[in-house]
Each structure stands twice: as structure tokens, then as C-alpha cells.
Length: 141
Image 1 (cartoon, helix red, strand yellow):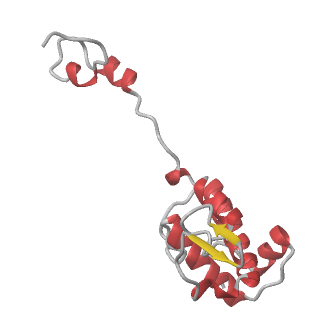
Image 2 (cartoon, rainbow, N blue to C red; image 1 turned 180 degrees about the vertical axis):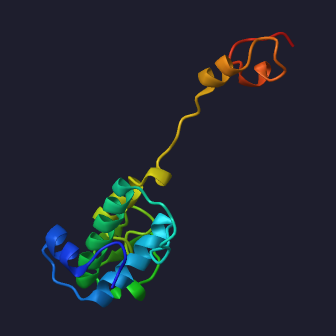
């Protein structure tokens, strides 16, 4: 069985009943998109990120029951058949469950980060060689 989620987690989060092998398959798909290894027991993943990975795995396992072609579908940007047009909301919509994608996007290492240049300015006095690197103001050419 998986390291991030169990069959009970899938039942609790989604109401779907799955087998251990389904959770394992879902876990590796989530790991692929989250850039994390479910079998790595040495990494220090925070409690919040573990909760998000558990949720993503549970959502993916439940979603895969309704999409059995997840391992055999084709990569397509849009589909047109019988006057109906379908376009995916993101590149991997045919492989990754929508709620799993939202959980993965909230992982700490997937979020954008800001640079704090004002802290760097305080660290280097004006006569420092590094001051110009972090100075956001105008300077003579």
C-alpha cells in the first residue's frame, strides 16, 4: 500500500472504495506531477505538504476509477466529434484529477516565491562592493 494515503483515506476524502493497488498507482502519478518520490522515507516533508499529498493521492485514486483509460489515452489539446468540441483546461487534464492538481499546486515547493531585496540592502552598507547588486534605485552610468 501507499506511503502518502491509504484506502481508508480515499474513502474518507471521496467516498470511493478502492483497493491498495489503486492507491499505489495513484500515488506514483501524483509523485510524477508533484516531483516527489512516494518511496523516499528519508525526505523531510512538512505535515501540511503530507496532508496535500494524501489528499491528491486520494482524489487521483477515486478519479482513476471513473477514467480507466488514464494509462492508455492520447495526448490531445482539443477534440471535435459529432459537433461537440472538447478542450482540456490544462495540459494533463486527461491524466490528472482536477482536485489532485489543485492539491499539488498548493505544495510549498510548487508555489512562487518572492525575492526580498530590501533585506539584502540592509545587510550590505552603501560602501560595500555588493551594494550595487541589490540597489533598486537609479545610479549614474
